[in-house]
Image (cartoon, rainbow over all chains, first blue to last red; front, side, top):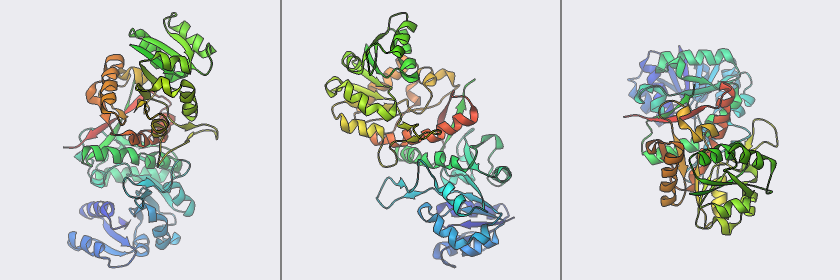
Length: 219
Length: 219
């Protein structure tokens, strides 16, 4: 499958590398073609990974992962182009973290709206599935780093898109379908994005990002 | 031990009833003395539970549980009186949920502040410990309703107060100390209060509030 990855940061790298390893044609996009981060990633994949602009990567992918810096995601997606997202699944991974006022980051949007919703509104023909945004990128692509069962949340307005993403998360990254929790429509993004302050606090206490949460239900 | 409970809703009821059952002198406070909810609770405890105003309950308690409606917590605590909270542990349970615009509720404060912080600032001599606010009240007082290990988060500026609350949560409600996660100072309230939208979404999907989360750590 041809996969477009938007963003050359840690998250884009982790997902892009895993996809190349599992045999997918993968193009990583950034603001400018041939960015240093992009070229380093391409080199790390032995030249198998491809690089280009946001527009190139979005046009290339049959499915797109948005791994951009959350504060700039909408600008990056505009550069990618609505026509290159139309009808495609857009796995919206990034969180609207605002580091401009120092640590800890706050959210650029929350409470009565979310980045996932903003993106679905701005690109109504993209099939946005918010997913993977409640954990570190190493855990995203290798859930067995955390022992036992633990959960991945997703949400979106398109049930078929969510089913397809769930299948890919299993086949590509090793997520058991039973550990994927569907939170309903895209407004569920508020919940998973607003989990970030708790995640960041736990990260600070543990000094280690290799953790996740499991939802445990009573009888 | 003499315990003051502020608030006669579900949360105050659950905590108050458990405390009476475990042999503590417990007074539940509300805006007016002899409220209907208060009288019903007193009757449900066979007359062992005491009732009064917010001021009465705060003056009575050696330790106070704030189980008020989060949107009105500060007003309720002002009625309780700073002099009745001075030097005492205030277990701040309520969440700043705003139901005024319908379901789902939003938060009256979040992102760069929290109810826990607002209350600690307003009552600097109270030893505020934010705790128990990430789960349903039945689970708060009977964690074994959810199988296996799962976590309770607390935070606050006073380490001795947090240690004492951890001890009480174990002795009174059955929380294993190893399942209590200390998130540091009171600004950790942002994380646990902003978890509510995810909790509410899960509650909506499950149709059942008997669940909690467990933090699972990798090697």
